View 1 (spheres, one colour):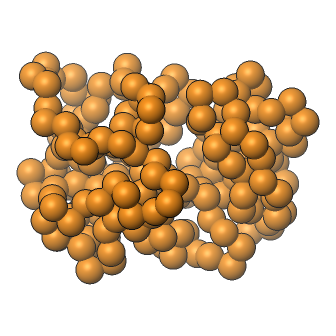
View 2 (view 1 turned 60 degrees about the vertical axis):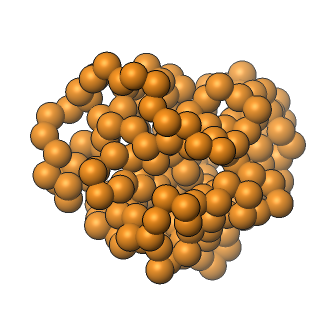
View 3 (view 1 turned 135 degrees about the vertical axis):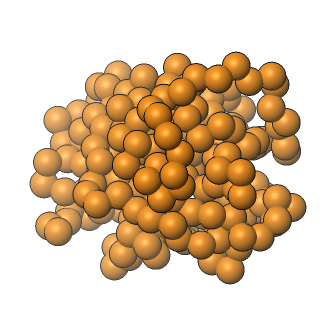
Length: 195
């Protein structure tokens, strides 16, 4: 894994790239982890980004010297407030999954050098309680609400440039849960949102 350290980047449009701090490969992809946290019903944690009407899975970049697993546990604590004792790793993607960030979301001086994210996705089982989730575990929370959602989340609710990676991660990791199908869209009556 050939890594290039990155400096920080200021906030970009709609807060999608709050910072690019961490490690990047020679193709311009930032090393990152994605987290699919499921409960005993195989429903997945869905977090609402602070001050936005945008829902996503927890994710974050690797810091220098971190393994993907170490970064996953750090991000889990920072974004969801869970400790390693609250979860069990069920699986991870075999390879890095990539997505490109559209140019208009990237700060002008980084265009041509930064292309997007390169992620290892982890599937975790919550072994603790729902009340162990704390969205205020860090000084700069990522989420201001959360809910459990059917495993096959409607792709329409995912920002367009991340949809393919979400679909690939969910599909590959579904084998650890014995959930059938791909992208089942079930009508959901307003799931309970927690703050």
